[in-house]
Length: 217
Image (cartoon, rainbow, N blue to C red; front, side):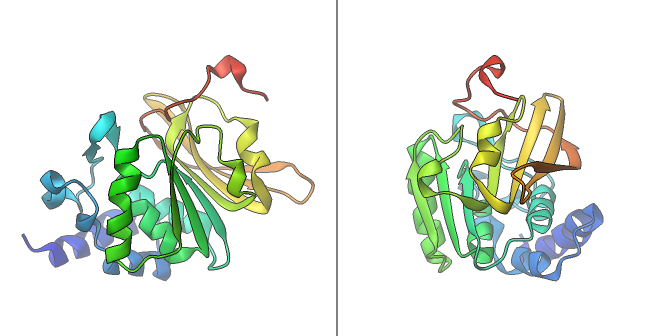
């Protein structure tokens, strides 16, 4: 398989057409090889516009979704980032290439253990991996300039915004399948939040969440 041609097609036909024009983001998808991170049995599909199956009934985001969230978050090289849900480690690597430091947490040790050598092979040394339940955030390393929740939540828990620094940005997918909405949440100087709708999507639910009635509004 010609991965370089497939990579070109991914960028031009998937990512650019989804209004991702940030050169830094496009360059990352050119230089960081997604096929090195997905399960070996799906390597040939790593650059396709699909959600790739992972163990434990999890899925990757599509490449265009990963690119769009990166562009929307506008991560700086001094930012402290929390990623809830390490998965295959590709989004973790993208975040590591953009940020000052990344704290990535997954409830499944298989994902955090397998991500470490992948990140090392690509020279990404600013990622801290934890195995644990971060469904309601990971306050011990906060506050964060950026938070990325890689599973969907039925409603938005206030606790996420509480772990953001002033001016911090949160990417989260909210709703019930099949009608979910990707949101960019920004914490304002007064402690409030600004909410921007990015796109409609459908993601597996984040594991470990309490029932929606337990959330505060």
